[in-house]
Image (cartoon, rainbow, N blue to C red; front, side):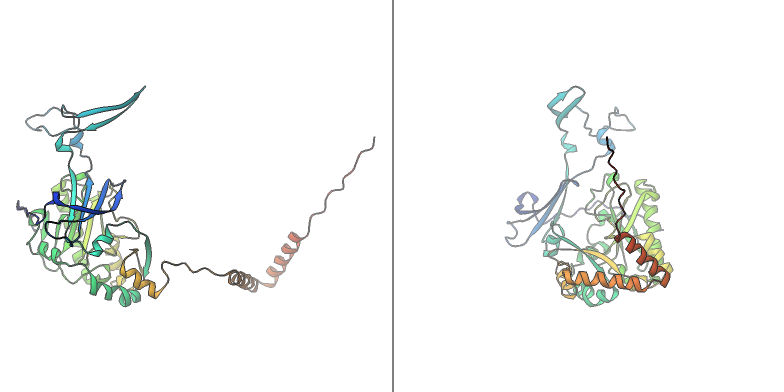
Length: 374
């Protein structure tokens, strides 16, 4: 059985985060408590764009612990300590509002840096209009696949992980089999510490699978191994019940080398919405029923305004504009539907329908008003 990989090596970045110069804010998500920034590192390049994402970390249970430290449980940073600074805003009867600043150990913010960033990265982290594309197998071959072949992200960073050239210290688990194996490691959106906010990626070793579209019955052994071995490794490493894990693929994915997303079902992780995610269990079941399911299925996915692939689909079929029928066409359509409905009726049904129409058109007789005389 493959063993988890242990290492303490950490690579230093080429840039100094404190020297980042802001160009503009790409997005500010008040729900996820995150902000995405576009700028540069002028000491390295005036033209190369950089994206910096700041995200406030989720709370850990230990952060609010009030237990006294012991030999078995040493002291950990807690909000309820002498280091807590409290400023009172107001107190009204049983209600109180305060601004609090905890100890420095609890003020950390998760940061992700992409440098140099491409137009696709900028598009990904920007707020813009979204459109649902219904991709048939024919449209995939005609539009999507040629576009991906010409303009996809570089996969060098993925191969660096698989070849242990980078991020070796972050690997949680590895099965080295070239056909069915994979590497399990934290997603960039996770700080790697707070299990409540766990988010892992399972990246397969096999190189010729870009996305769901390439999967077929021959990959079932790999997918089952990915599911079962990941669950076992996460249970042993993080003590998370396998029945509380959400395991899914994205379509379209953010990079085109097959990988599965894993996080707890209690967390509202990004990209879990139905038009984006495909559960690993469902994918396995689909391939068991029909080995070439993903070569035959229509797969909906979302494109953002500014994406060149959206422009290509717009050339093939209306996406941004909604065709509106004129009043004359609408009336003709309604009359045609009414005629077709009438033609489908039997003689008795048609006669009954005419009777009902006559009855509705004939006003009910009013009761005679009688005036009483004194």
